[in-house]
Image (cartoon, rainbow, N blue to C red; front, side, top):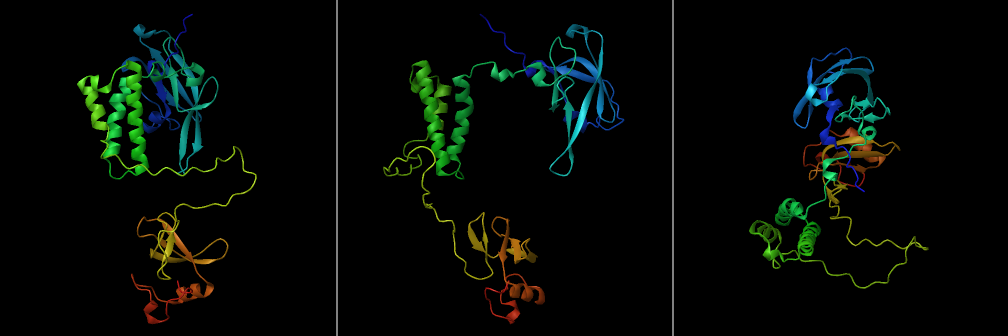
Length: 314
């Protein structure tokens, strides 16, 4: 019994809401001229749009050689939702199921644009089985770049080495041959991507055998033990604040006096290392001293010799 493969997205004509919005066709009252309707890099027809208040009037027709017939004219709803950047985002409302969609599709022999769910579409990449040689040609150069990248850590490089060995074993298992017996182009990819044993990053020592914990939630709460200290440095002067991103103390720049929601005064600034916002809670006396003192020059902490540094001073 043969199964028919689904129609793919690549075989359909696509109507994208963002492309129409960038062209200015989704402004109320906007009208477009005749626009080409394309499918698989060829023009199969033409369409025209007229934007109303909440819907888009779509008129399209196909050429005779592309299953052409009488032109179709129907409204397509346009929904506007708020965006995170205080703007708005546009969506198509599918004429059949009324779900929001970014794209509408017109398969061959179809008459109207609908969403991918209503058309039961798939992708061309899902219709074919993965080829091991495609993985060799695409993944191995990327894995080699990861091994040669000095900015990547040990864990990432070990993961790349394991992936190279996994692809090598898969090739030998599927084709019953050694990698050294492959064609020169593929063999060079393996040899170039695989790090020599002398240059492989050292693997961390194996953890000592510990008692195997039972599955599920523990009956008793176990004490948490941090394996790596959270603080990378200690505070040297009262002017330093702790940066959570750097996990270290440093004297920030661009100081200013703020008050938190709970009423606690604090001095807020910018970390000179990573640029993150940092703050240090101060006492009420320190906040009063900060408000009364003149503007502090960069790098000065003695407050012009007025008072000595202390935990109260900002």
